[in-house]
Each structure stands twice: as C-alpha cells, then as structure tokens.
Image (cartoon, rainbow, N blue to C red):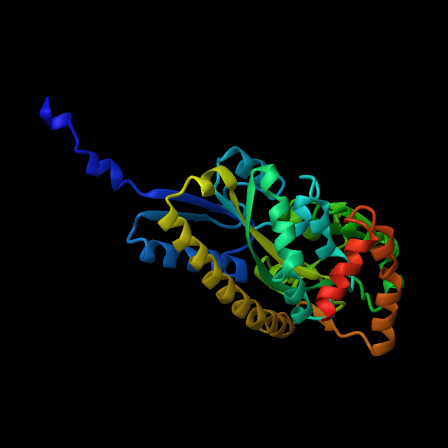
Length: 321
C-alpha cells in the first residue's frame, strides 16, 4: 500500500500551467514575444511555471478566445484592443480610431500613462487582468486593384476584425466592411469572398496575404497593437512570489516585443517588395491628406461609442504631450 502514498512534496512540485493562446503566426512580433515570455518564465521559476503557447489560432479562433479566457480554459491572451468592445469596455476601441496617433511614440505616451492603465483596470470587473500593451506597427490597406486614394476603395468588400470603429473606417472610404476570423482571411482573399483587407505589415507577410493581394498601400491609418491579459481569478490566485516574477517577465517580454515589432515592420515591407507578388504604394502628400480627410470624421462619429468626446480629447492630449 505504501507504494501508492506519495509525499506532499511531489504535489508541491507540480508546475503551474499557463495556456497562452493567440491568433498570429509564431514568427510575428507577438508570436516571438509569447515564446520569449515562455522561455524566461520557465527559466526564472526553475520550472515551477510551465507556459504552453498556442499560436496561429491552433486552440481558439479570435472570436472564441475571450470567452475561453473568462471561463478559465486558457489563462493568457493577447487580442487586439477592439475585442474588448463587445465585452463592454468600448473605450479600448480608441486605438482603432483613424489618425489619432501620429506615431508610435504618441501611442506609447497614452498606453503607458494613466490613460492606458485606466483602461486595463476597467477589465477587472469582467474577470480579466490587463497586463501590458504590445506594439505591432501601423495598419495598411491591400486589395487586388490600386488604392491610391479613398475613392479607389468604393464598393470593395474589405475584411476587418470585429470592430464597429473599423467598420466605420471602411464605410468612410466607401468600402463594404466584412468581419471575418483572422484564420479565414487568406482563403477569403484567394477565392474573392473579399476584395481586400487591412492590417499590419507583419500579418500581411507572415500570413502570406501578400501572395493573393496585388496592391498594398501604406495608408498607416491606425495603430495595430495588442493587449496582454490574464484570467483574473487565475492571476490573483498565484503565489505572490510567482506573480511578481511573471509581472517582471511581462515587462521584459513587452520590451522584446516592441523591439521586434519595429524591426519586423521594416523587414516585412522589404520582403513583400522583394517577392514581386504585390506592389507597394506610398501615397503622395496630397493623397495622404485625402486619406486623413476622409477618415478623420470617424473620430467624431464614434465618439459616443468610444467613451465620449472628453475621453477622446484626453487621449489626444496624453499622446501629444
């Protein structure tokens, strides 16, 4: 009988498992940062914590993952901010507003300041702990016809992620927004279910979307970033020393991600150009002004949805200072 009586220390050594699910490819900035987080967490906890990373929608598609997090089926995610709109925290959709951030430094001034921290706090009542923001560059337009100015998009069926703001952006250019799961985009582009899409260069390249898109326009109309989150019950239940180690690891993984994102945007652009499969177009100053003019009204149109005019003004002020 004694052979079946295991000492308590055996159970104490059972590792804490974190399932980290995301929809991007493993070689994107987010994919690389998730693997880096896994590596440093397992090293720094001497194996007390095991991180299982599920990339490329291999565990859950983007429409399913937040529910899985709330249920505790997975412990960590890094979705786009717009995903929290349906969860009832619509202020996150401010990141989707066109031309509200002039550059990545402006994004950081807001996201890493009181405004960004305040948004993360709002997730707690939904059973979610907000941990960090990860960069992924600015978004571009792509289609199988030249799109030099917004008028060129009239009537095009453009894939977007599920966001009312992104839908309004497409409508402002005369396009028809089509919400599709990220994992379905390549086939939809290939078969003509949609005429084009928008997104960061890293996704356009790693998902091979450029192979089935003849034209890419560097509109840089809105930021592409992610919010790293955890199941609150799981996070709060961690031993204090483990949680502290994970918090430091998140900071280090964030710095790693943002460094990779900056380099990856440039390398993805170069690779798409070199492929010869997709023409990359840089709008002239006048054309860029046309993009801004067409889309800027979306900021006012979506103000009530995204926390009100006062909130949007505070975002502008925080990002400008």
